Length: 267
Image 1: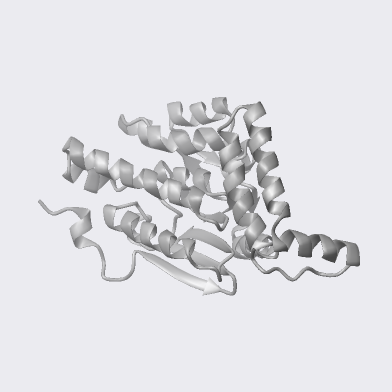
Image 2 (image 1 turned 90 degrees about the horizontal axis):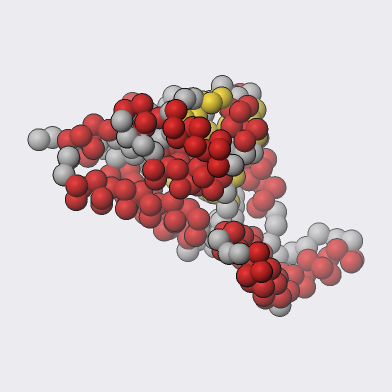
């Protein structure tokens, strides 16, 4: 039986382009609306691993090629491999991608257009920030095919209030970009022709800050969110004290006092 993975096109499934300190990763299966095949997951995992050790990059943008951001997992490939072991490997692989985004020292901005459905919506929810064209639609639509979006629900339930997440998961209904912004799934919705500019302005704003403080802060934010309030304050206090010992903190405070721009050393 021929699977989707066996007929992948020769061109790269994830394309990386660097502009200064910003790296853009483009999901590159436009004819399949960038559905996440095994091969694409592997390519994305490799790209993220390379970025994790690249000190020249301060922000990552994740986008899709063609008409959509991402239509979720490749359902044809999933049906062509109906055994439980394959499905378990697939969803474990998807989970590793989400954890890699969380663990990446650089913030990741989802730049969304067209549709972001099921695991595509999971990617949006799992990124640190997200911008979208105002005509974008979002859904966790697996339930409409008899498949509850349990793994997308992990990211979605941590990105938006519980009742909003469950409404999306239980109905599979699409929401528009304005609603996605209202519930906190994305940071901002802009006209489609302004999406690239708005995303790069946000990336540039983040990239101006200390890369050491950004990496430390991103890690600490996600860590403290999983703790109780007492433990969260204890842990956050330790991390702020550690941050104060960094050269970038000394440089930043001195620059503020001296009314000049700081020169970050990344440590």
